[in-house]
Image (tube, rainbow, N blue to C red; front, top):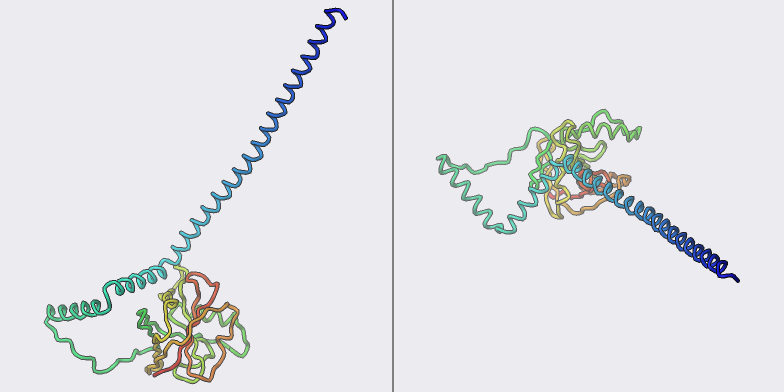
Length: 270
């Protein structure tokens, strides 16, 4: 074969190899670019989703805290008071309280008279000394229990809750044999009417053997807590009549939600 033809064939072969190398290099670059876009897009999507989730959670937590600020303030104050009592000791707290009373009386030059008799409130009241609860008891009026119209009953109860703790329609009266059933808000919308939107905010802190007092028709009835439990909103058996002298308190839990109902049962002792 002539030398000129050999050189031409060699050049053609070399050119083909170079083209193949360039082609594979371009293919590798295209594959890398596609992989970068795919994985980069995936990572950006995960980052954006995570960012959105965290932002939503923060906004929800802030809004939830604002809506239930009053109830949470009561819980925080109660917790701090108990924490302080545990640190200082009950005796120290009582000594300080007695010293403050005596000092005030001395400064004002007055004599503290003994309590001769317990004065009953003019209206019906529920008293839980542990939580400084002294709230009026309201009745849901114009309720026809025979029709079993629960939506109407719920409307009546919600309206009465604006003015205090509600004695549930059809349940026993305080001091009577049966199930005297009372319900109150643990927290409610801050823009809603009424002063008792968080009257039972501290009820989840109640304990067995705590005392709950009901004043009805200027008579006092003391109940001792015997059971504390949570139930679903659909569990209405807590309203059933009983043969004992029972008091039942109900509120929503956790505070600020209506997911479950806290049920506190107590028995008449006085």
